[in-house]
Image (cartoon, rainbow, N blue to C red):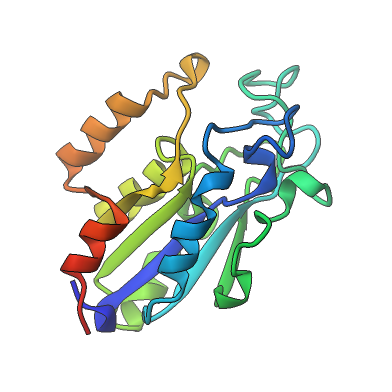
Length: 198
């Protein structure tokens, strides 16, 4: 893995997925990932992208709506949609908002931004490193889609936080096994640093 052909994708590192917004969708350890994510943000990737859940208040996935899966979270214009405190967001080169259509679910940013993989390729990127929230939901679906698009993909586990969602059939261990089957590499930050060079 070389910095010269690798990008970083920070997935949904937002307050609505932490105890700062306890009525939304707090993920255990969500706030704790900030130092590790910031370490990743300091590295000389070709580019750094971030995705941001950006939901209308009546999004289909919310309780009381069509899919009835999740409490309202990361609603447009609310504190829950903001990035985590202390996160070095000035390092983001682009922020890709998703989930902004009421009747369209978008776990992975490629669902609403299908040209994202092509854009990466035009910059000579063949590997994407992913971190953020939640490991087994939006991080996994972003990793899966990029893997299907032909990229080498690594997910940094200690710069991410996950949560089991039985109602949606999304379990951390099951999802990790599926990711490994697809060829997604699950690494710690320390392991990643031993594998990447300039």
